[in-house]
Amino acid sequence: MKIDGLITVRSGFGHDETLARLETAIRANGMSVVARFDHEDGALEVSVSVDAATLLMFGNRARQAALVKALRLIALELPFKVRIWQEATGQ
Image (cartoon, rainbow, N blue to C red; front, side, top):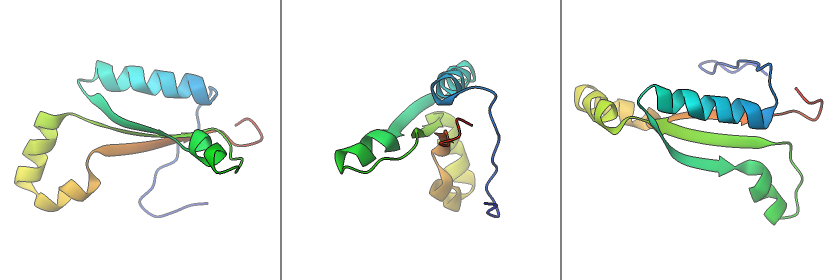
């Protein structure tokens, strides 16, 4: 499904490896992971089965503060978010 404003990038690695690599890249670029939501675990708590899916929220507080100071409405987009998922096909 294509949604305007969203960018989807296919990884050559599985869910867990992609997640680990992304977290490493986030930290290597001076940012930190603010929150991590495991949608698969959450769904299992209510007896629903979903494919592996994790939402990461990340950023750099000092840089984000400067962005918000310059453009208040950018706060609606911060911290940055990325969703990593693996489809039933393994992709």
